[in-house]
Length: 326
Image (cartoon, rainbow, N blue to C red; front, side):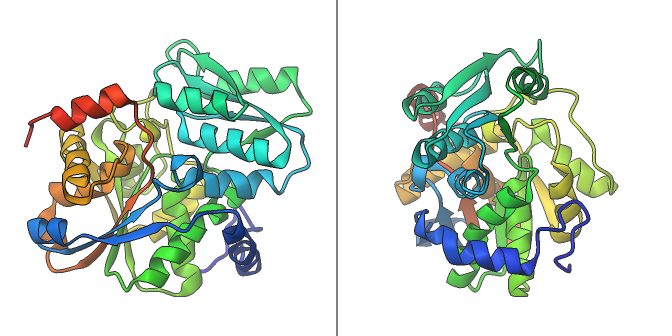
Protein backbone atom coordinates (compact mmCIF):
# COMPACT_ATOMS: atom_id res chain seq x y z
CA UNK A 1 0.00 0.00 0.00
CA UNK A 2 1.48 3.41 -0.89
CA UNK A 3 2.04 5.95 1.87
CA UNK A 4 -0.78 8.19 0.67
CA UNK A 5 -3.65 8.51 3.12
CA UNK A 6 -6.70 10.64 2.46
CA UNK A 7 -7.38 11.18 6.16
CA UNK A 8 -3.78 12.19 6.93
CA UNK A 9 -1.79 13.60 3.99
CA UNK A 10 0.89 14.57 6.55
CA UNK A 11 1.60 10.87 7.04
CA UNK A 12 4.29 10.61 4.40
CA UNK A 13 7.78 9.20 4.07
CA UNK A 14 9.53 12.47 4.91
CA UNK A 15 7.61 12.85 8.17
CA UNK A 16 8.16 9.19 9.11
CA UNK A 17 11.90 9.52 8.56
CA UNK A 18 12.02 12.71 10.63
CA UNK A 19 10.29 11.05 13.58
CA UNK A 20 12.40 7.91 13.29
CA UNK A 21 15.53 10.06 13.39
CA UNK A 22 14.48 12.13 16.41
CA UNK A 23 12.06 10.25 18.68
CA UNK A 24 14.42 7.38 19.67
CA UNK A 25 16.38 9.83 21.85
CA UNK A 26 13.32 10.10 24.12
CA UNK A 27 12.12 6.49 24.22
CA UNK A 28 13.47 3.18 25.44
CA UNK A 29 14.18 0.45 22.88
CA UNK A 30 11.75 -2.44 23.03
CA UNK A 31 12.93 -5.71 24.59
CA UNK A 32 13.35 -8.33 21.84
CA UNK A 33 13.22 -11.71 23.55
CA UNK A 34 13.30 -15.06 21.70
CA UNK A 35 11.51 -17.70 23.76
CA UNK A 36 12.47 -21.35 23.14
CA UNK A 37 9.98 -22.69 25.71
CA UNK A 38 6.95 -21.07 24.09
CA UNK A 39 8.32 -21.92 20.65
CA UNK A 40 8.50 -25.61 21.50
CA UNK A 41 5.08 -25.58 23.11
CA UNK A 42 3.26 -23.98 20.20
CA UNK A 43 5.27 -25.27 17.24
CA UNK A 44 6.56 -21.99 15.87
CA UNK A 45 9.58 -19.78 16.49
CA UNK A 46 8.23 -17.19 18.94
CA UNK A 47 9.99 -13.91 19.67
CA UNK A 48 8.50 -11.47 22.17
CA UNK A 49 8.72 -7.71 21.61
CA UNK A 50 7.91 -6.35 25.04
CA UNK A 51 7.01 -2.73 25.76
CA UNK A 52 6.54 -3.43 29.46
CA UNK A 53 9.82 -1.60 30.15
CA UNK A 54 8.93 1.43 28.05
CA UNK A 55 8.39 4.73 29.91
CA UNK A 56 5.02 4.45 31.74
CA UNK A 57 4.97 0.69 31.09
CA UNK A 58 3.49 0.57 27.58
CA UNK A 59 4.02 1.51 23.94
CA UNK A 60 1.70 4.50 24.40
CA UNK A 61 4.58 6.74 25.48
CA UNK A 62 5.92 6.66 21.92
CA UNK A 63 2.67 8.14 20.63
CA UNK A 64 1.99 10.58 23.44
CA UNK A 65 5.45 12.11 23.50
CA UNK A 66 5.59 12.49 19.73
CA UNK A 67 2.15 14.12 19.73
CA UNK A 68 2.59 16.46 22.68
CA UNK A 69 6.06 17.59 21.63
CA UNK A 70 4.55 18.84 18.36
CA UNK A 71 1.91 21.18 19.82
CA UNK A 72 2.16 24.61 21.54
CA UNK A 73 -0.88 24.16 23.81
CA UNK A 74 -0.14 24.31 27.55
CA UNK A 75 -3.09 22.08 28.56
CA UNK A 76 -4.08 18.72 27.10
CA UNK A 77 -7.33 16.79 27.43
CA UNK A 78 -7.42 13.09 26.60
CA UNK A 79 -9.62 10.04 27.09
CA UNK A 80 -8.08 6.74 28.06
CA UNK A 81 -8.68 3.48 29.86
CA UNK A 82 -5.23 3.95 31.35
CA UNK A 83 -2.08 3.50 29.32
CA UNK A 84 -2.50 6.48 27.01
CA UNK A 85 -3.53 8.56 30.01
CA UNK A 86 -0.34 7.65 31.85
CA UNK A 87 1.71 8.43 28.76
CA UNK A 88 0.00 11.80 28.30
CA UNK A 89 0.51 12.69 31.95
CA UNK A 90 4.20 11.78 31.93
CA UNK A 91 4.81 13.46 28.57
CA UNK A 92 3.05 16.58 29.86
CA UNK A 93 5.29 16.57 32.90
CA UNK A 94 8.43 16.27 30.76
CA UNK A 95 7.27 19.00 28.38
CA UNK A 96 6.02 21.47 30.98
CA UNK A 97 2.31 21.04 30.19
CA UNK A 98 -0.73 20.12 32.27
CA UNK A 99 -3.39 17.57 31.40
CA UNK A 100 -6.81 16.18 32.23
CA UNK A 101 -7.49 12.52 31.49
CA UNK A 102 -11.05 11.22 31.20
CA UNK A 103 -11.10 7.62 32.41
CA UNK A 104 -13.85 5.03 32.97
CA UNK A 105 -14.46 4.36 36.65
CA UNK A 106 -13.71 0.71 35.87
CA UNK A 107 -10.12 1.51 34.88
CA UNK A 108 -7.34 -0.38 36.61
CA UNK A 109 -6.51 1.36 39.86
CA UNK A 110 -2.81 1.16 39.11
CA UNK A 111 -3.38 3.17 35.92
CA UNK A 112 -5.48 5.83 37.65
CA UNK A 113 -2.85 6.23 40.35
CA UNK A 114 -0.09 6.47 37.75
CA UNK A 115 -1.82 9.38 35.97
CA UNK A 116 -2.13 11.18 39.29
CA UNK A 117 1.48 10.40 40.23
CA UNK A 118 2.70 12.04 37.01
CA UNK A 119 0.74 15.19 37.84
CA UNK A 120 -2.29 14.62 35.66
CA UNK A 121 -5.87 15.35 36.67
CA UNK A 122 -8.21 12.35 36.44
CA UNK A 123 -11.87 12.77 35.48
CA UNK A 124 -13.65 9.48 36.23
CA UNK A 125 -16.89 8.68 34.40
CA UNK A 126 -19.51 5.96 34.23
CA UNK A 127 -19.45 5.03 30.55
CA UNK A 128 -23.03 3.76 30.82
CA UNK A 129 -24.09 7.30 31.69
CA UNK A 130 -21.81 9.35 29.45
CA UNK A 131 -19.29 8.34 26.80
CA UNK A 132 -15.64 9.31 26.87
CA UNK A 133 -16.14 11.46 23.76
CA UNK A 134 -19.09 13.30 25.29
CA UNK A 135 -17.18 14.08 28.48
CA UNK A 136 -14.12 15.26 26.54
CA UNK A 137 -16.40 17.56 24.52
CA UNK A 138 -17.76 19.04 27.76
CA UNK A 139 -14.27 19.69 29.09
CA UNK A 140 -13.13 21.24 25.80
CA UNK A 141 -16.14 23.55 25.83
CA UNK A 142 -15.06 24.75 29.27
CA UNK A 143 -11.41 25.09 28.18
CA UNK A 144 -11.39 25.99 24.47
CA UNK A 145 -7.68 26.79 24.61
CA UNK A 146 -6.86 23.16 25.42
CA UNK A 147 -5.68 20.52 22.94
CA UNK A 148 -7.53 17.24 22.52
CA UNK A 149 -5.03 14.40 22.38
CA UNK A 150 -6.43 11.48 20.40
CA UNK A 151 -5.25 8.09 21.61
CA UNK A 152 -5.07 6.55 18.14
CA UNK A 153 -6.81 8.56 15.39
CA UNK A 154 -3.96 10.99 14.69
CA UNK A 155 -1.07 10.71 12.23
CA UNK A 156 1.42 11.84 14.90
CA UNK A 157 0.24 9.04 17.18
CA UNK A 158 0.55 6.47 14.40
CA UNK A 159 4.04 7.56 13.41
CA UNK A 160 5.19 7.76 17.04
CA UNK A 161 4.06 4.17 17.48
CA UNK A 162 5.65 3.18 14.17
CA UNK A 163 9.07 3.46 15.81
CA UNK A 164 8.19 0.16 17.49
CA UNK A 165 7.54 -1.38 14.08
CA UNK A 166 10.89 -0.06 12.89
CA UNK A 167 12.66 -1.78 15.81
CA UNK A 168 10.79 -5.07 15.37
CA UNK A 169 11.38 -5.31 11.63
CA UNK A 170 15.07 -4.49 12.11
CA UNK A 171 15.30 -7.37 14.63
CA UNK A 172 13.75 -9.91 12.24
CA UNK A 173 13.28 -11.43 9.82
CA UNK A 174 9.81 -12.51 10.90
CA UNK A 175 7.20 -14.23 8.79
CA UNK A 176 4.41 -12.77 10.90
CA UNK A 177 4.01 -10.05 13.52
CA UNK A 178 0.94 -10.29 15.77
CA UNK A 179 -0.29 -7.01 17.27
CA UNK A 180 -3.06 -6.22 19.78
CA UNK A 181 -5.97 -4.23 18.33
CA UNK A 182 -8.09 -1.72 20.23
CA UNK A 183 -8.50 1.64 18.54
CA UNK A 184 -5.91 0.66 15.97
CA UNK A 185 -3.12 3.07 16.89
CA UNK A 186 -0.49 0.36 17.24
CA UNK A 187 -1.69 -2.00 14.52
CA UNK A 188 -1.84 0.78 11.93
CA UNK A 189 1.62 1.92 13.03
CA UNK A 190 3.02 -1.54 12.32
CA UNK A 191 1.50 -1.46 8.85
CA UNK A 192 2.95 2.00 8.18
CA UNK A 193 6.41 0.89 9.32
CA UNK A 194 6.27 -2.26 7.21
CA UNK A 195 5.09 -0.38 4.12
CA UNK A 196 7.68 2.35 4.59
CA UNK A 197 10.43 -0.25 4.81
CA UNK A 198 8.94 -2.24 1.91
CA UNK A 199 8.94 -5.38 4.04
CA UNK A 200 6.96 -8.50 3.13
CA UNK A 201 6.18 -9.43 6.76
CA UNK A 202 2.55 -10.39 7.38
CA UNK A 203 0.77 -8.44 10.13
CA UNK A 204 -2.11 -10.07 11.97
CA UNK A 205 -4.22 -8.42 14.66
CA UNK A 206 -5.46 -9.96 17.91
CA UNK A 207 -8.67 -8.63 19.45
CA UNK A 208 -10.87 -9.71 22.39
CA UNK A 209 -14.09 -11.42 21.33
CA UNK A 210 -16.35 -9.13 23.39
CA UNK A 211 -15.00 -6.11 21.50
CA UNK A 212 -14.24 -7.50 18.04
CA UNK A 213 -15.45 -4.49 16.06
CA UNK A 214 -12.17 -4.32 14.13
CA UNK A 215 -12.40 -7.98 13.14
CA UNK A 216 -15.99 -7.52 12.03
CA UNK A 217 -14.98 -4.38 10.11
CA UNK A 218 -12.20 -6.21 8.29
CA UNK A 219 -14.48 -9.09 7.36
CA UNK A 220 -17.33 -6.87 6.15
CA UNK A 221 -15.17 -4.29 4.40
CA UNK A 222 -16.84 -1.40 6.21
CA UNK A 223 -16.14 0.28 9.55
CA UNK A 224 -18.49 -1.01 12.27
CA UNK A 225 -18.86 0.06 15.88
CA UNK A 226 -19.65 -1.62 19.18
CA UNK A 227 -22.87 -0.35 20.70
CA UNK A 228 -21.02 0.38 23.95
CA UNK A 229 -17.61 -0.15 25.49
CA UNK A 230 -17.05 -3.92 25.60
CA UNK A 231 -16.59 -5.82 28.83
CA UNK A 232 -13.32 -7.72 28.62
CA UNK A 233 -10.18 -8.32 30.67
CA UNK A 234 -8.27 -6.56 27.90
CA UNK A 235 -9.01 -3.06 29.15
CA UNK A 236 -6.78 -1.45 26.53
CA UNK A 237 -9.11 -2.83 23.85
CA UNK A 238 -12.36 -1.54 25.37
CA UNK A 239 -12.87 0.77 22.43
CA UNK A 240 -16.11 1.50 20.58
CA UNK A 241 -14.48 1.46 17.16
CA UNK A 242 -11.29 1.94 15.20
CA UNK A 243 -10.28 5.49 14.36
CA UNK A 244 -11.00 6.69 10.83
CA UNK A 245 -7.32 7.02 9.93
CA UNK A 246 -6.55 3.67 11.52
CA UNK A 247 -9.31 1.98 9.55
CA UNK A 248 -8.04 3.53 6.32
CA UNK A 249 -4.67 1.91 6.97
CA UNK A 250 -5.79 -1.41 8.44
CA UNK A 251 -8.43 -2.38 5.89
CA UNK A 252 -5.64 -2.81 3.35
CA UNK A 253 -2.67 -3.54 5.61
CA UNK A 254 -3.77 -6.35 7.93
CA UNK A 255 -3.91 -9.94 6.75
CA UNK A 256 -6.50 -10.86 9.38
CA UNK A 257 -7.63 -10.27 12.95
CA UNK A 258 -7.94 -13.25 15.29
CA UNK A 259 -10.67 -13.19 17.95
CA UNK A 260 -9.34 -14.11 21.40
CA UNK A 261 -11.56 -15.11 24.33
CA UNK A 262 -10.90 -13.90 27.85
CA UNK A 263 -10.03 -17.44 29.03
CA UNK A 264 -7.31 -17.60 26.37
CA UNK A 265 -6.05 -14.18 27.45
CA UNK A 266 -5.72 -15.58 30.97
CA UNK A 267 -3.75 -18.55 29.65
CA UNK A 268 -1.45 -16.22 27.72
CA UNK A 269 -0.75 -14.03 30.77
CA UNK A 270 0.20 -17.15 32.72
CA UNK A 271 2.43 -18.44 29.92
CA UNK A 272 4.31 -15.15 29.79
CA UNK A 273 4.89 -15.27 33.54
CA UNK A 274 5.85 -18.93 33.73
CA UNK A 275 7.84 -19.20 30.48
CA UNK A 276 9.38 -15.73 30.18
CA UNK A 277 9.23 -14.33 33.74
CA UNK A 278 7.40 -11.39 32.22
CA UNK A 279 4.52 -9.44 33.79
CA UNK A 280 2.03 -8.74 31.03
CA UNK A 281 -1.31 -6.95 31.19
CA UNK A 282 -4.29 -8.71 29.57
CA UNK A 283 -4.29 -6.51 26.47
CA UNK A 284 -0.61 -7.22 25.94
CA UNK A 285 -1.32 -10.95 26.15
CA UNK A 286 -3.74 -10.91 23.21
CA UNK A 287 -0.98 -11.77 20.75
CA UNK A 288 0.04 -15.02 22.40
CA UNK A 289 -3.67 -15.66 22.92
CA UNK A 290 -4.04 -15.57 19.13
CA UNK A 291 -1.45 -18.34 18.78
CA UNK A 292 -3.17 -20.38 21.49
CA UNK A 293 -6.46 -19.92 19.60
CA UNK A 294 -5.04 -21.00 16.22
CA UNK A 295 -1.68 -22.76 16.70
CA UNK A 296 -1.89 -24.58 13.38
CA UNK A 297 -1.97 -21.28 11.53
CA UNK A 298 1.53 -20.35 12.72
CA UNK A 299 3.16 -23.78 12.58
CA UNK A 300 6.82 -23.53 11.58
CA UNK A 301 6.73 -19.74 11.20
CA UNK A 302 8.98 -17.09 12.71
CA UNK A 303 6.45 -15.11 14.75
CA UNK A 304 6.88 -11.91 16.74
CA UNK A 305 4.31 -11.39 19.50
CA UNK A 306 4.01 -7.77 20.58
CA UNK A 307 3.45 -7.31 24.30
CA UNK A 308 1.98 -3.82 24.35
CA UNK A 309 2.23 -3.17 28.10
CA UNK A 310 2.53 -4.49 31.61
CA UNK A 311 0.27 -2.25 33.71
CA UNK A 312 -2.17 -4.40 35.65
CA UNK A 313 -3.69 -4.21 39.12
CA UNK A 314 -1.95 -6.58 41.56
CA UNK A 315 -5.22 -8.18 42.68
CA UNK A 316 -6.32 -8.93 39.12
CA UNK A 317 -2.88 -10.18 38.19
CA UNK A 318 -2.86 -12.53 41.17
CA UNK A 319 -6.28 -13.88 40.19
CA UNK A 320 -5.16 -14.44 36.61
CA UNK A 321 -2.00 -16.26 37.65
CA UNK A 322 -3.90 -18.53 39.98
CA UNK A 323 -6.54 -19.37 37.34
CA UNK A 324 -6.16 -23.02 36.41
CA UNK A 325 -8.23 -22.85 33.22
CA UNK A 326 -5.75 -24.65 30.98
